[in-house]
Length: 311
Ligand SMILES: NC(=O)CC(=O)C(=O)O
Image (cartoon, rainbow, N blue to C red; front, top):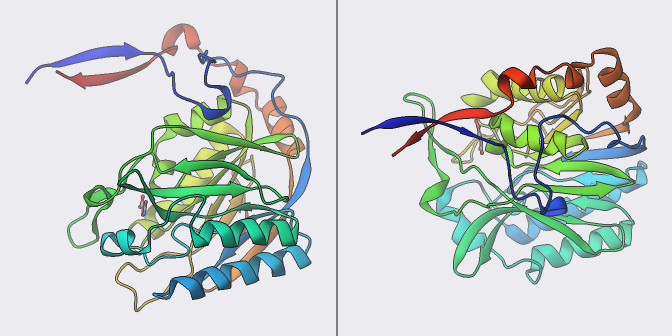
């Protein structure tokens, strides 16, 4: 087998700006300052889908009572995590019951809901999909997990999402109160290039519903959140389900928010809970002004991303 080094430009289908071919300098006029209150809801997920959804809806309303304006749920909040469950729990978007419940919760509470993820069936394929609803209950966007979680760590964990799921093929950002938020799902966070594209698009925050496990969680969960926040100088939030030790896939929990300095501002343990936090995107500007790596890049040396293409 021959391997050829190939130089490629980072060009990607960005939903908000599909026609824009990306250059490698960060735009300077992108981020408007805004303050908002975010809630990250770490719920326990069981076998009963209706109960999982009702519980999430109840927590959305509680977060609203605490002043939250944007409420985010975890990965697979309506379904247990496991390839054996995805087809059974899958729904069409937006006409399934989970979409209906999220739409209604967003409208009744008057908040933006980032609906974690659910198994989605679409044209005979299955996806791991995040929906975003505005405070009027309109579906703003969907993100389908781009990188499927296929790993094998002997003595640790083996998981193969691709046995059942199909990967999405678009990068997704959306606007909330004038700022751009980038969406990724769990394993997506390991792929720096994806996060970098969203930062280049002008995101001030990256939000990842995720469900790491007891092997990778302690090693990489906080590390990855801080790495993305520090490298890209933006807010990063991860939202996990709470831990259920009787589940086949035991999640790490530890939903967290990291500021653009790379500092963990709030982190839960493994139990159900909610993080409520004021997000000020002015911090993004402050960090970027004080440590101006974005305009110090030696793009003359590394303007392109090299990879090795199999032929
Ligand atoms: N569950 C995932 O998608 C990712 C994960 O657990 C990991 O990257 O580790």
